[in-house]
Image 1 (cartoon, rainbow, N blue to C red):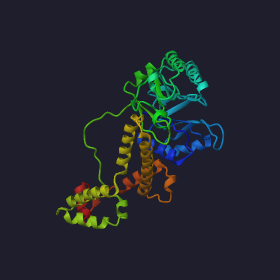
Image 2: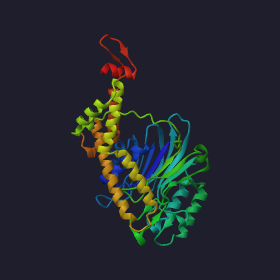
Image 3: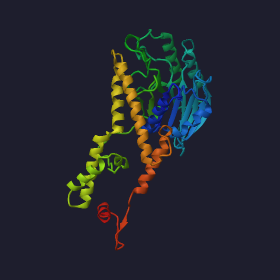
Image 4: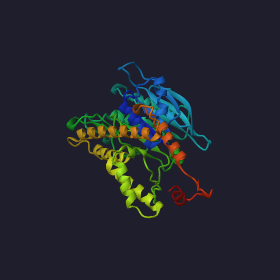
Length: 399
């Protein structure tokens, strides 16, 4: 099970919404905790379809128009049951249970008080929650707006040792420990360059010993960030183990290739170069077309992945002079790639009546999957009514 937490700094612009959709598509979280949504309850309800998560608990933001602040939301899939325990403008506390009742644990999303003179209230909130609804297995996660150690901050004024001590004491009294992380050390940056740059690890996951006993292989990953000054964190209770073996990917003809005027000539040339056997010729032709399309159009998903990896590398060395400008250019490029991917999915689904910008990721993926199932040929009959089910036999009958 995956839990994704992100201080998105407002969902009022397309760039941030696009980044959120892409996060949910790639990471496929079971639960999603959003902070600083700057959205009202009815506005957040619309995000269920965009994220692919069916259920939501939200805390409305304060203010209206351009003077909005705060706002929290917890979204989750039907495969888990979520029982709400309490909410405030700084937390959502709930009990998460698997549908089959096999396990349950307490999950609390925290948005720490951002104002300097109120940061101690975050520690008081943790202490208060620890005394309510006792549950041995407890996970507390989100943006705490506090650091746990001096080395978790880079640049700016020296860390406030009193706040660090209060935070450490709150964890000790609540029997919580920091889960650690993979990825970039710092989860927040002030988007300044050179000597003005400040970074800190404000986002984290805290867990009780019992929670770790239930999920001994769990890990917390700091993901790439753009469209916000906070990066998302992903708590994966069952991380995928690396293994060998082929990817089993099937190469299929893409209808969008026909939109290029070179495609018919390329197709004819590849077909003429193929072998005498129709099945071998068709396979060779398709492989050649795939190679041509990759050179002609590029590989958007692969480029998205490569851009993210480059961003990750640069963000770890962000303190170097001039790196911030490069990062901003890469973030703009990544946003363009995500927009291109939206258009590709809309074409693939044949749902052209929806505008690209209003794309529902789950809808388009579902439509594409339906088309794949509908277009798959399981068997075929020849003129003598003999049925064939093997791929090479089907290919021969069709030719």
